[in-house]
Length: 173
Image (cartoon, rainbow, N blue to C red):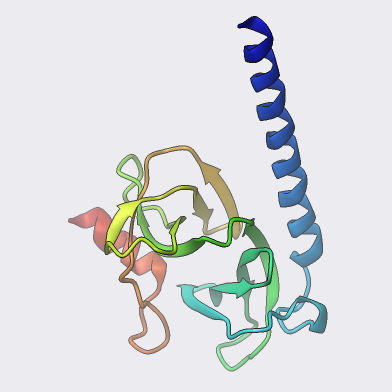
């Protein structure tokens, strides 16, 4: 039984190290580049949401054959089509989807994104993975808090709101 426990711990450690390396690779590949750089374009359409209108930042989702990447992109002005990628996170289980409208009860005013199973048809559910967004530093910070995500936020240029506004509304309720 001890060998099995030791083996399980070693496998878990190796997977954690490999996951950390993959995350670092994604950051090295994307951060600091233009969001329009040819070598980081996905085959399909991108989707995203305005993150913070005061900083001209957006979340942009890119889908590739083996990985889905979420970017924090900062534009110089609202009229720009391309911006600088400030941070990136990736999920390699294609069966998961990024969710932009997530809530962490321990920090209700924070902007949080998470992942849920793509075939989960419920409107609301617990995140599989989640990241709190540091608005000032424009970075993703992985959280292990229990986070609930709702597939409903369409914040963006259409109504002038952003995910920061949505988080403030949730915190005030």
